[in-house]
Image (cartoon, rainbow, N blue to C red; front, side):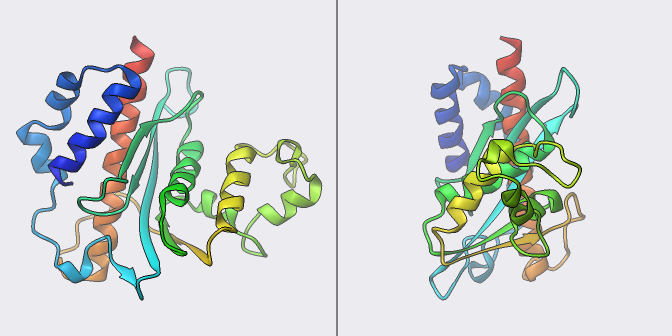
Length: 227
């Protein structure tokens, strides 16, 4: 990830959460971290993660992170990656209580909130999130809507309240403001592809950057919890 962009993200985090910018720089902007966050070779300009189709489609990568998921000492973050040097790249802690599923959904929500083009392609490694916000036979949201017009009262097939229903409803509303929203699944934590000019590398790289941003968000959640 570009150092200047990461520095901007950390400055915003420092102001928002009153965390020492010097402390953040030591952890995320030292030489070792810069090496880990930068790709091993420059991506060709035709395949950077800011690539747009016909100038109307934006490709975005999202991820959620939660360490100790489901436990009292859990801490989680959200990461959204738009592309190299893009100031919209997003790394933030989750709100309480954190969870893997919540982080993944918030990532999609933030991607839609920050997107600027009418058509959006979002890569996520969460099939759960995809089903939550997909209409028709491949998703769940249409069935939930039938149970009640109020998302807070949605019920799943077992008659239980739908988790994160308000986040899902927000995503659903934002999708309607776009000409099209396509969610694509990507497998997480895969080996780096050899061919850096390939579409496979392009997708791997974007997902990897979103994962790193989500982990930064998780670390910030932990710092808040310890204060």
